[in-house]
Image (cartoon, rainbow over all chains, first blue to last red):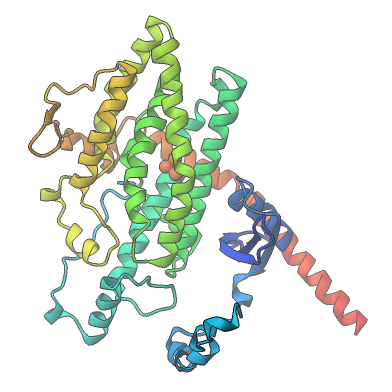
Length: 94
Length: 333
Ligand SMILES: [Fe+2]
Ligand SMILES: [Fe+2]
Ligand SMILES: [Fe+2]
């Protein structure tokens, strides 16, 4: 028998108006059952108010080897952070 | 401990490492987490699969001795609590199987390895739970020992394993407390007979609980590489010592006696001296000859086989639904 249920990634929105966050994965035959199982596996202590599930093999991920080209360019752009600019104290809060 | 006998290779010195292995080791030394798709030595991957797999199997098989008492809990409240505890253990197993699967092994493969005896689970679950005092003692000692091990593993180098541990640790202290609470009631408010039951349970579970941390460091040849890779953070003996130091005052509060004539506070080391468990018994149980090994495996294999029609049925239904949706899309276009 090779009827292993497919793998799903589970995303949960916590109580406080946050984004859905990846919490883990599980096996289920279809999306409906994946939601049911996610309820039992990942929200036994009120961890969420909403669940997303998506089939793991439908997620496209960046490759670890692309880390440099993808993320290094922003290292040098420190002017994107407000602390780059010195604002005189007299000006007040800005 | 939940993974007591994980075979791994000896540690490599920097000179023996390839360039890639050195970069990998540096990342671990810096405290970086290793994530699923990143390069890792084959030995790291294999050892982790064995360790996380054993840990997952232990959570799942560990449901059996406690599940045994769900229908016989003394009150409805105790029953609901035990049910929730055992359900948590199922969850722990699932988090861990998922973590192992990120290393390229499938759930079905892992279960097959458990069912055919090629993968182990913790020796502790091969002991029977004879009465309600045993349920209290299991929560107190077995979950207590599990926590001792799992707390340090939150810092393990493999990202998915570490995250599973963090999640598990959040849920675990309820397990130990509900067990200790059972014993508090039996020992401080119960009858003489109930206190005797608690003492008898402690007598039977003490040494098997000490065995949960695995063989003594001097006989545990596989620790060095695992510690270098931060798959293991503390040694077996360090954890065992911590466990004893933590547990002795808890036993005293209950008015119970640890069944060890050599147990004595050692001022110099700031911990208790204590007797080692019988390691021959440990190896015997690990090798399949404990009181409940056969029963546990039978229960697991039966559950797996009896559930096959259901798993296959749901999969067939899902495929049919998919096909129907696809056909409807074509018709609409
Ligand atoms: Fe456990
Ligand atoms: Fe657990
Ligand atoms: Fe537990």
